[in-house]
Amino acid sequence: MDTGGFRKMKQVLIISASPRKNGNSDLLCDQFAQGAKESGHHVEKVFLTEKQIGYCRGCGVCNTTHSCVQKDDMAEILDKMVKADVIVLATPVYFYTMDGQLKTFIDRTVPRYTEITDKDFYFILAAADTEKANLARIMEEFRGFTEDCLSGAREAGIIYGVGAWEKGEIKRTPAYEEAYEMGKNI
Image (cartoon, rainbow, N blue to C red; front, side, top):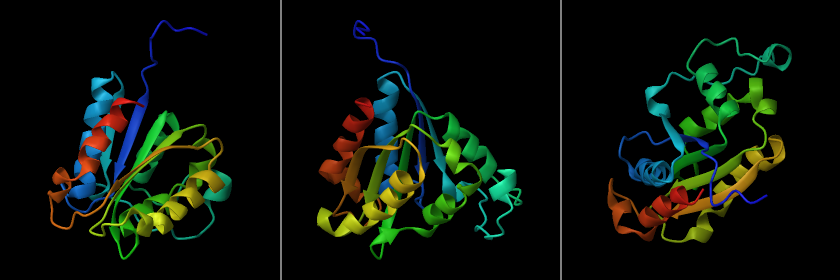
């Protein structure tokens, strides 16, 4: 169907797992958000460090109730994930894995993960390492969550913010502009 060049406004949810505001992965989130907003999309960024999210207790109650026994900020974020068209998961890379905040967040999606369907996923990784190939194992972690657990999840793009150790160094890498362009072209 010809839409005459009209693109549907999308609900974009960015999950920033950086423990540092304006850290390298968080700066890439902001660039992605700017590009998406300029293209007319509704964008919301959740900065996990500002949220109270407890570790999954593995109690299994949510398997039947579809809600967690813990009363923290996760239920609100899950609502946003279910409603979003696009979800961006962003993490700094620590010892060649996603950071603990993001892993805890992913574990806590269990109560409603079957409702997180038909989403486009973008991934943002920021690392001091200069080789993108060395970050492949993190993408396998992400794919284990999205491809193997979420119905209709589509991997839409990856931003490898490599070669950035100190806070703000990402601004001098190609990933900084790539994040903006990827957000603009969702």
